Image (cartoon, rainbow, N blue to C red):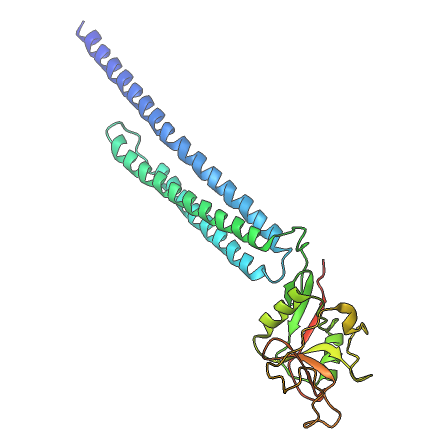
Length: 287
């Protein structure tokens, strides 16, 4: 009878130990599964957003640097997430499954869960900035049509513009633009004139307008007359005793002033074609 009593106590101890172990394992699993799901969702989100970043960045021109920076931010977030995931796995590996230590380990899991939530918040914030950037530059919209410009050229309304840093006379400027696959700028409307003035920043630049063939008959480099385009922005002087532009001033050049530039005032002046100015080339943006 004494042996039966001892055997019974041993069975009860083993049964209670087994039940405690199973309860601890279930509690651990309940904590573990949600965090693993959070990690998987965040990793998937980073992967998807990284794919979107690459897809759109490959179609850009002037905005490539901005999108490259955004892509780097995503990669940094992914690295932080991977590091946190590694810490989580280490914690699981060293986790002591016992009911007595479960409350202490729960605190560690709570801290890990908070880290995941912080990363998720950063990811969501970066995603919002990325979407704002897409909206700002209207990626692949009907307005920009994903058109690209050569490096150093500025995109505007389906065209590319090069504001030179070097100076040449009017003929040299015209020929140089041709070698680059474009031509000296032809101003077609007020909106384009405003863009030209803003980019010239108060510095005189040659434009593609001249009356070298016949004095007073101003034509663009495509041989279209100024009157046909109807966009005319000659400088008008406030002093009635002084002539407005073009005035064909001959004191510096006996041949007169037969080539046009955008001047300091953001209006047009005629100048001697021999003068060296920066210049503006234009061409259609490539699709």
